[in-house]
Length: 104
Image 1 (cartoon, rainbow, N blue to C red):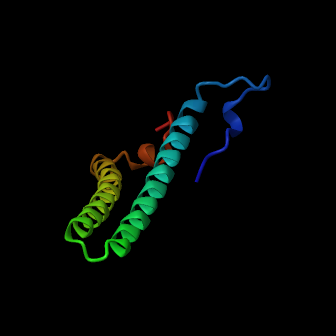
Image 2 (tube, rainbow, N blue to C red):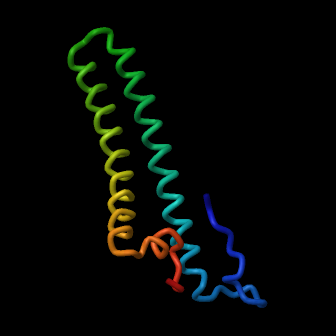
């Protein structure tokens, strides 16, 4: 999932401009990991709220809203990536989008 630094560091262990795509890729991967963890936490929390509601309509509604918003947020993030990849496909630049590189 995460890329290693590899050839973007010179012999003195100093970062070069080749590190920018690696850093960008790692930031995006970390953001996706964070979104996934938060979504999983919110789904578990909504399930717990639903179980502990005891049939109270207000608490059931709050749990339902939490679950709905968590899933909507995850779908929004995934759709944003889908839209970017679709635009890359239409314009013929999908290699640049998937590599995060300067040599496209």
